[in-house]
View 1 (cartoon, rainbow, N blue to C red):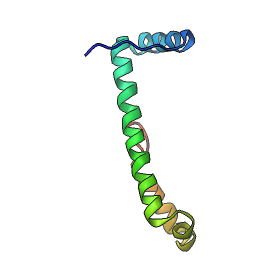
View 2: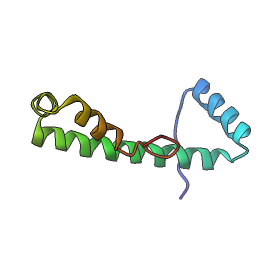
View 3: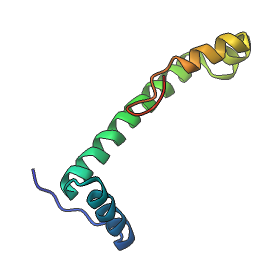
View 4: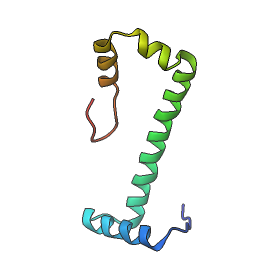
Length: 83
């Protein structure tokens, strides 16, 4: 599907430069950017919902710091990021 968007010139120029550097089309760059944004937004929505159910301060304060660190370290951060 084709669509038209309006973005500031500086953002357009930066996107053009990045697409050129990655050797991909402008459309491919925008597809990847939107997909990454949607993945991130989805993860944040899940985290927000869990925080609402379990609370953040009460649960984090009740955990042993080592257990809290292990739980945080075990969360998948996304493509190109560490576990």
